[in-house]
Length: 445
Ligand code: GLU
Image (cartoon, rainbow, N blue to C red; front, side):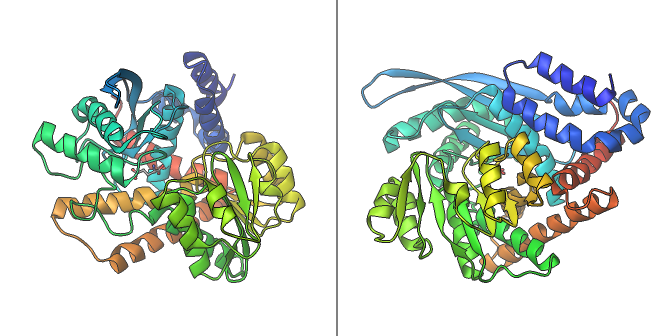
């Protein structure tokens, strides 16, 4: 068995139930196979792949908190520090009832290589808990965050590990986490990013993933002699990533016609009304049915099916992992989609990825496309460490440069390795080379 296959088999047998982790590792290893096999002895001698797929450290802990009825609740919390070859561990926290150790591990693995593509000095980690914020009061959210950070703070620090938000963790949660972190450590520092603007947060952090995605799309289209202006865009999701991708797409002159939440999706042929969407999702934290009720021409569809069949030029999955299945990929090809650019982490299954690529749809992976969020997180770390705030324009223009640069890094890597427009492989190879070089230089430990 080849070195690459052997490493993959070991991942499956060490972590038999962690399906999403298998998926992330498989995609990565298939992409770097040729690069590794060209220099197999060197990589094998250093156990480079084994050291990449086994996280540096996995913290798994109990989170005990009391609900509004005085009942004691227990959740499972995690922080998985995957690799710090390029800088302090960096990556968000996900609070969602489906969270497992395997899910956090796949997300942490993705962070390592995403962060490598940004060119910024950050390693990769991820954390979270199987806590469901839906239907909880503000006080319950606060007590949960305080209990969670009561354990997390032992492993974090501005030069050690810097968490941020992800699904279920936004500005409100980061505020509560930061407050208790500060109380426990007496340090007012940049250990968490996504903080409020009055206490060390950065302008553009809220918008960063969505805006960054569109800067990437804009660069991709320009490089292919096309213009985002006038294009039709379909989006899944209605959270932070989706909302600010829609905002920037509209500013750039595109027409966005769909969005979705965990219950259903909306087709709005007149183009999404962003103010209404923000009111429903960000202010009221309500369902998309409320959006559809106020838009006479909009259609509301229960469930997930059908969104990717809507005719589009650019599809932006901005919801969660494995959102685009093989069936969806067939629908995207059938409706003539030009490119799929991933706003969520790993939203396309391996079968769907293969089908899209074989049928001429340009697929840009989340490691590249959604790196805007973590990039501005790193700019927040930079501001915190110099005890200064930068202007909106300064942060936004750095974000735009980083995302456009990532496009060229992955496109060049694909070209140099004779992979045409296989940007999934291009991203994995470029990121692998950077992390492997740093690991090799730092010795075996
Ligand atoms: N959760 C985001 C991501 O998946 C942001 C992480 C961060 O800002 O550290 O990239």
